[in-house]
Image 1 (cartoon, rainbow over the protein chains, first blue to last red):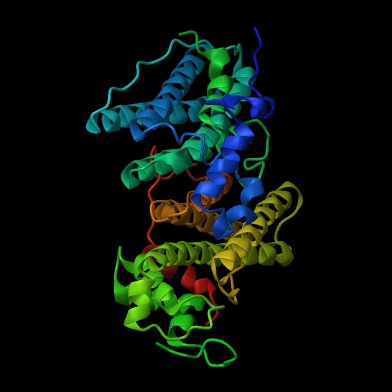
Image 2 (spheres, one colour):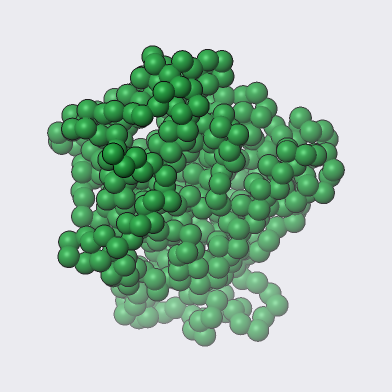
Amino acid sequence: MNQQTDNTAVAELAGIEIKGMTRQDFLVRGMFATGAVYGATMIGPFVRSAFAAEEMDDIGILNFALTLEYLEAEFYKRGIANAKLSGEALGVAKEIGANEAEHVQALIGTIKQLGGTPVKAPTVVFPFKDQASFLKLAQVLEDTGVSAYNGAAPAIKSKEVLGAAGSIVQIEARHAARIRLLNGEPPAPVSFDASMTTDEVLMAVKPFVKA
Amino acid sequence: MSDTHEGSTQRSALEIVRDDQVTRGKFLKLVGGAGAVSALGILLAACGDDDSTSTTSTSDTKMKDKKTTSTMAEASSDLAIVNYALTLEYIEADFYAAVIESGLFKGAELETIKIIGQHEAEHVTALEGTASKLGKAAAKPKTTFPLESRESVLKLAATVENVGAAAYLGQAGAIVDPEILAAALAIHTVEARHAAALNTLTGQKFSPDGAFAKPMTMEEVLPLVKPFLVA
């Protein structure tokens, strides 16, 4: 089973099609429609897929986020139970796991408040066997979470929902940095965090989702 | 409306408010809370951008340009936010430059600080470009920082980054252009990473707010950075 967990793998997804348009066409159309006239293209190179979730409504985007949060919450729960974590790593995993569980509850609540139906938790499987492999995967999941929220957020219509997403993604970024420090990796690898389209995110987490 | 746009050495009151960080803070206090950014934006739109040769706005012009004015108002309110972010990034970039020059840090810690400083410098460059395209970039302020010890500087760095992250979060809902929003979000999470790392280095919780980050308004942020601005 191809276990593509590395974000660099998603560069290969540049050719995927979205509703009959290639992704490049999709991005270009989006840019003309929404204001390259403002000259924001100065920062264009650092920002990808601002229009990733354009077709989804707010409830759809929240359910997309909920799926990721379910995945992360279960990941930390299993890591704490099975990855033989100790010391600093155990404490960090517990704190992050508690955050993710709160994110799950908050997203379920918000979706219901908006009159939507929250998706069910996916059945997941994670290929870690010890602390080192657990922390490596944690880093990928947290970095992916940041890119997922950043990719979807510009398409959110409600300012309140955007605020909630922003409030959550900031915590995911803190998680990512904290895990990276545990891994001896730079906490902030780039000056502008990349964003990912919903398709790219779903491809990235596909190895972990059984149903 | 002032007619001191081009070729004049005297800045109009509005230009002073738009360009001068400290004055903007006072202005925002005057116009009050939530309406502050859009109020400033609407005033800027009414004045027109720097390159405009039209220096008066009659009611006829306002009526005719109603649609343009609301688009201009949106661009101007985005400009105000971009310049606010730019000002914070100027302060951060200056801070790290001063810290590096202080000689207080060595080895791995110095490398971490250099990397963070490099990020802030890149944020400055990007935001300057965006602000220039939208209208005019805020002037680079003169800054001053207390640099007493390694510990006090690291704590200050952590504070600055946490405030920076909260500041971006506080503006996300006000940004009109989705591309500018995307860029702001891309910077927001990097500031959060910086904050978490520095919190950890200084023995603090990587997320002091817990599971949900708290935003800060301009009114909350500006007094916190004022001590670093030389009048």
